[in-house]
Length: 272
Image (cartoon, one colour):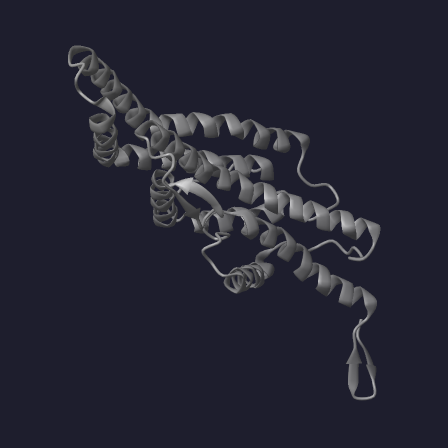
């Protein structure tokens, strides 16, 4: 308890430890999640804005979070608790980042089949060079993520995780980590489903060029086929965009379900 000294109030060690833990451990989990989460942790946002968002979300959630454990932050047990909060936050944000990686993989597959694999640019979402088609899909995924309130659902999930997966030395279970590792196969499957209509159409177009080449040997297939493949690729991409949106919504819903499984609660999450 506070002890008055003259006209001043002095905080005891227990009160100071509780105050530090109340702010520090939620900040670690939320900050780790914000560091790797899509859109909210994107490189397009300046570091100062990301830090401000992390602090604002933490301060808004602290009043509704359960009581934090009375553990000395600088002790060995406090260090284990801190590591667990960082791991939990990274796992939650990384699971949704993989959803955007599926869109990047789909764009790379399509760009390679179109002959645009060399036309690459820096993706501010991931900070790596990706083909222009991948950038198109990432921009579409970002807009859909915001329209479907994915950022709000993610904040709700991280808030509920403090109840279902409280701050303690024990963190993610082995089953939760296994769910995260198994999520990779779903990402590859989702990327193939997104890219399949365009890739299949371009494959049929290439077969058609092969037939034309065999019937008209004097035709320069490289001079005609290369620009025509690129043009037809973009023409085919346009009508397939609604299907891309549906696949992304399915992957996003599955990604949020994965986050819930790791946090050990069964409330259904949708992006609506």
